[in-house]
Length: 79
Length: 419
Image (cartoon, rainbow over all chains, first blue to last red):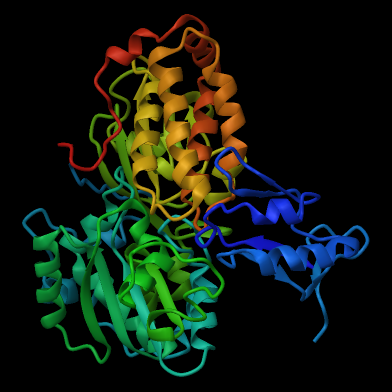
């Protein structure tokens, strides 16, 4: 899974950092900083929950990306 | 500003028809280049073979972009970007005012090649006389594509390609979150080709003279000519046509050479970077070579900063302008750019507390790559290059206070000021 923030939609509610502190912290102005775009399998459920909870739907969890061993930017599923 | 063109090895191409007596009308244009030949989809192959890249700053291969749009479903749209948001650039304005039919030929050729029936020529909406003269130029032609001249708000980010498309769709002239990109879904949801007006002018000549002719100027990996705007401490500031790969120093020589002892060159405009004058001098003007030298080609601006100016103060002033010019959409840009502008102003004008440097270093990573468009990244690149090139100066400013250079009148142009 790959996480993205739509910076236009994001208004800095900060829910994502509450729900996914392992990957998301907030900058001094309250906007999310992602430690990594790729979500480890163990955190996929939390990431999904954080994306669903975002009041402006600015956090995007893209399931078409899977993190493989040593793949930094992920790759798409075939088909 | 002067507009003097002296032929380099290949001689001027775009500017071959430039007259000092006034804009080139359709008969003048046809006398210079002949009528635009009938073109079709095959033109895309010729553009590919020519190796033309976008002259608006990003340098994306034009043929590839045309192919993506041509391959989309249904009818297509072409947008000519003539907004020239870079305050230090004058090349697009020169083409649109003096050689409008070269741009319109390119627009018509691009439309025929990708199968577009509608085209838009976008310029800033406060340029009333330019809008009028372009409308007259369109009316004088018989194009099968419908060309509409559109005025768009004159903000810096309004001419970003997704902002143009959003504005033509009736929205705000602000960058959009991608994907989809305009090539996939643009004006009225149709695949849309957005090209800079200089790119289209080259296209008009490639449609006439072919890819081998185009490649007879420039370098194999960076073919053709480009328009550059040379300014600052040079004897004849203005727009010049050079071959790609011409050394930066030679571009300055074309503008009459240096008028004062230089300190640094700003290459690529306010989206570019400062380079030490000596180091920049031999660097070929190509995207790859300037990037390797820590700079950027951008839309081809070279500004010479004299040794008696303060590079940090000049940069602080530009950063403040750019911070005010954001679209106001993305948090890191809305809050980060003013914070950076404050830190730069501290460093340039106040200093003496040893804090501004640390503040800048902490702020830069909080802004980089966090906007929907590249506006914030352009600002951080400019600041990073300033504190790199003027590193000793920056330390002295930060610890001991500003240098004497801040008393000199600002050199870098901003809109609304007399040039």
